[in-house]
Image (cartoon, rainbow, N blue to C red):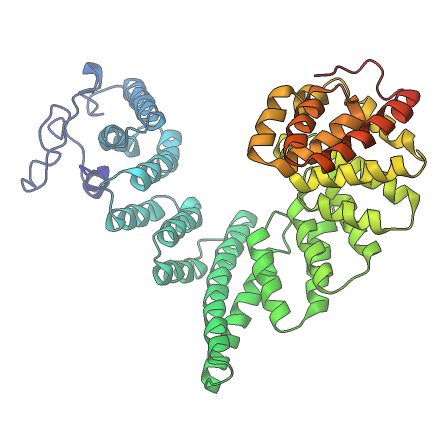
Length: 469
C-alpha cells in the first residue's frame, strides 16, 4: 500500500513542498527507493496546497475540499483512494489557525485508523507506527488512542502486545488528572482486568484438565490473575454505564470461588440502580444467577416481570410464561396468556413452534374449562383481529408452514380455527392436508374447532367482523 503512514513519518518532521506528490512525482525526492504516490483523481485546484505565501482561508478551503473527497472515498470503501488523499490532508497539522491545528490530530486519527483497519495492504507494523505517532500528537487523546490500538491488537490475536500497551497506558499521567482522564484510566484498567481474566480462565481450564495433579505454583499464578482481574473489573462496574462483558467476567470469577453474596450484590446493583441506564442484559444476568442458586419461583417471576416491561419479545418470556402457568393464582394465568400473545406480535416469533404450542395449549385449557375466562381470549383478540389474520393466518403462510414445518402448521391451525372459525383459509388448508396424512388426529382437531369456535367464541363476540383469510 502506498500508505499515508510513510507521509506521516516525514510530514510531521519536515515541511511539505510543492514537489512532494501533488504533480504525480515521488512523495519525498530524497528517498528514491520509496514508491511514488500518484493521485489521478485529484482535482486540479488541489494540486498546490502549500501554505507558503498563501492566505490561511484559501489553505483551509483547500483542506476542507480534500476532507470531503476522503469522506466520499470512505463511504464507497475506496481505501486506496482515501489513503492517497490523506497524504495531502496531513498538511492540516501546519494550519495557521490554532483552533484548526488542534482539531486536526483527531480527524487524522479517526480517518487514518479507518483506512488502516480496512486497506488490503495495511500491515500491523504500519498500524503500530501510526498509533504511536497519534498518541504523541495530542495528550488529550492519548488514552483513547491507546484503547483503539489495543482493540486492533486484540482483533489480530496479539494478546501479549495488547496487555503490554495497556500496562504502559495505565502508568501514563499528564498534568493534573481530570475527571475525564480518570474515567479513561479506569477503562484502560478494566480492559487490562479483562485480559487478566482471560489468562485466569486459561489457567483454570488447564487445572481442570489436570484433575488436581498440578503444582502449587500453578494455583498461585491462577490466584494472582484472579486478584488482578477482580480489582480492576470491580472498579469499572461501579461507574454508571453498560458494562456487560466486565460484569460477566467478574461474576464468573466470584462464582468459581463461591462468593455468592458478592455476586448477588453486584448483579442486583447492576440491574436496579437507577443511576445505571436501562439494560435488559442486567436483568437476564441476575435471573440466570438466581436460577442457578435455586431461588423461589416468586423471586424469579419478579425479575422476569421487569424484563418483560423492557423487552416483551425476549426469549426468556417463554420461561416467564411457564412459571406463571405453574402458579396457583388466577391473575398469573391471565398474565401468562397476555405474555404469549404479545410474544407472537413480533415477527421474530412468527414461526416459533414452542410459542404457538403454548398459546394453543392455554386457549384449549380455557375452552375446556366450560368457557371460564373466555373474556381473557376476547380481550387479547379484539386488539389483534384486524392484523393478525394477514400477519399469521394467510393462505400463503398455511402452504409454506405446512411444507417447511408440519408441527408449526398444526399448532397455528388450531389457534387459527378457534380464533377465526372453521372457514379460516389457514385452518382449512392445513386440516385438509393433514387429513390425508394423519386422518384421526386432524379429525379430532376439526371437531374441537367446530365445537368451540362457533358455540363459545361467537357468543362472546370474538369472531364478529373477523376477516377469514
